[in-house]
Image (cartoon, rainbow, N blue to C red; front, side, top):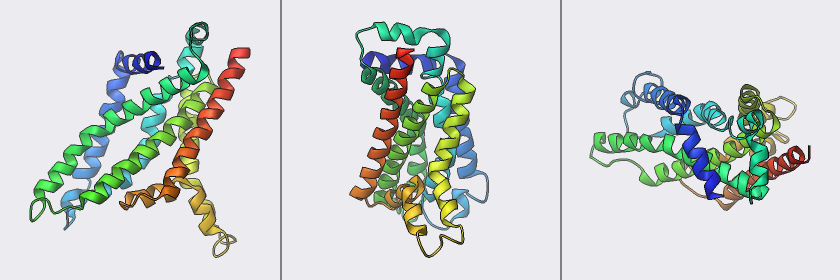
Length: 244
């Protein structure tokens, strides 16, 4: 598994694409956080990083599918997936290696945003006037969100040998499970009946719950269940590909 993990990290940074993806992510996030007045931290009268954690899910919808689209699609396209099958590796070794590799890349992309925390902490009046507990909870929420988006994107990648299709499918499904249930719950016929239930099915509800700084076991179980579900779907598809 760790050999696959190292391979994923190396492959991502062996081409210009990896640096471009992370560079675009950080550039866009920095513009939103410091330049655009609608979200700029400088326009707020109190020390907070709420903007970061409101913007991050929207950017993750594109960042994570871009990171994961090569995972299986490229292997299938150039024929190296068959080579992996000849190695002393189980399907879970391959899947978990790629999962943790992609998750590590997401972590590397998010890590520089700690500079924002330090900046707000320093600019606060008095210095350090920021709810660190809420920030920690929000980063944990980002970790869970990244995990389930990675699992979804890996499943999309194993479905096709075309990286563009894998990216589009992953972005669409991530958008659907994050925002889709909220849109459905707003349908007039559901309001006041099952709208609360529909919202709780979506990722957005549980992400915002964790981002408040309180780690609820129900939210943790939700995210872990989603990750396991999509990893099992990926495994079943990989077994089918192997049989063919």
